Length: 188
Image (cartoon, rainbow, N blue to C red):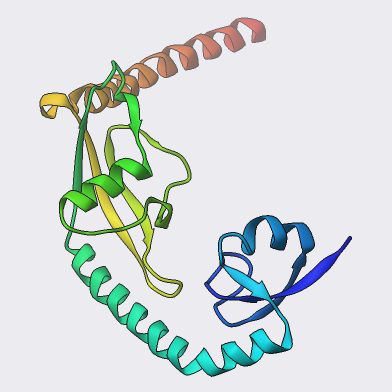
């Protein structure tokens, strides 16, 4: 398999940081990294150019990190509430996605790309959740998100849980008695 060395111009997840020279497959470089200007070929001229830009990159990195830390401090005091239609057992009709969270943050004055909001899967039930937001390579924050039913009706999920617990407790003693009677009859 053909590989090539590229010089990263931006941080790339699971690959490397800005300014590093990494070895990648030629197709990945040709089809993804180079067209998106995330990397350039690691020629002697490009390496010299990046070395010259390294001080500017260090200043830019420090500025980006300081901005991300400031934004993280502001986000730690923030909590997001979403109101959605809810089914019988607290399951949402639809879901709350990273795009919904990004739009809610934008409405409050924070410009955060939806790809920086890390949800394994969309939120599909009512309750309180912690959503991981990665503001910078070294700076991230957990954002509290509350999802409740329209009109504040998160009661179906809360009412279903005690009802399910009561239902689970009721048959257990009856089953234990039936098992005891069956074993007593078998012993006679």
